[in-house]
Amino acid sequence: MSEPLTFETLKPYLDSVEARLQASTSHEERVIDQAASHLAIAGGKRMRPMLVLLAAHLGDGVNEDVERAAVGVELTHLATLYHDDVMDSAALRRGAPAAHEVWGNTVAILTGDLLFARASQIVASLGAEAVRIHAETFERLCLGQLHETLGVADGQDPVAHYIDVLADKTGSLIATSARYGAMFAGAPAEQIAVLERYGEKVGVAFQLADDVIDLASDSETTGKTPGTDLREGVDTMPILLLKKRQRAGTLDAEGEQLLSDLEGDLSSDRALSDVVARLRVHPVVDEARELARSWADDAVAELDGLPASPVKDALADFAVLLVNRMA
Image (cartoon, rainbow, N blue to C red; front, side, top):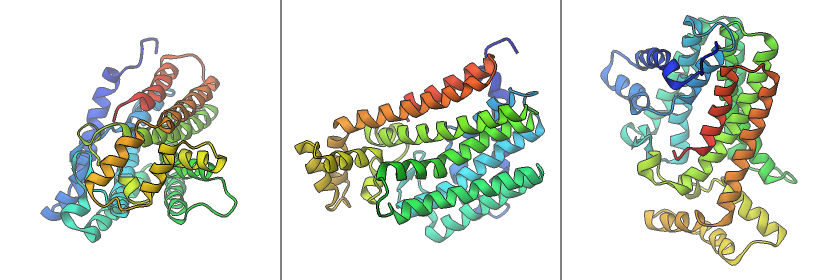
């Protein structure tokens, strides 16, 4: 392929994947259908399917297996969102009420389980190797959530712990997306390995950028309530950087006040929005943004193992776009 690989090139395949995704989240019973299709209908970036389709161009291009793999990874991602929103008590997801806000925690959790079951059925149609990869990925997704919930072990660096959590919770599935695309398009084994390493680093960069976006953008832009993690006591990267400065004795007075306020009652929207507004102008947010860009640069550097091609260029652009987006 000598022509640039663009969104327009991939759009017919993305449309096909979207149709398959909508079909995979439907159910003959009305309430189950509404709950299962809730987040799929709400939309989303479809970053993981996009990466599957991009990676396929390292091989023979998009085929039936590649499209099914793209649906499988997105269904797995959607399943985790139902669970995450329950754990985080998130009110909004993709601009719509979170599923647990509409149907309650039990239905939201079971719906997430249902979507994971459907993802597993699709992946099973791709063969034993795909099932093994999917199972290992899901294990990492669970371990990442467990490690986030359990917190930092004694003597462990909080920033390093958080990066490990992001690699498991986000990087693992994005790495699998890239791996599936290349694998089911028949790319060489060494290129599949490059894509897997690239995908994991892209995932970390993406989530670090999300930490910044969660503070720097409003709910109309992101479709989520700003500062939800702060309210739930989850330390995202800007907070970890505040605490790192505090341990080093270099934190300014505003940072000290922010940490004090974060220990207080953030149950009201007014209290939360006040903390978010002050945090978004603190230098740690720019530091977190630069960290995201550094991980994206490292991901692009992994592509040095690929020959020059429009696919390689598109993958590099993909990494940069993920950390420079506004939502």
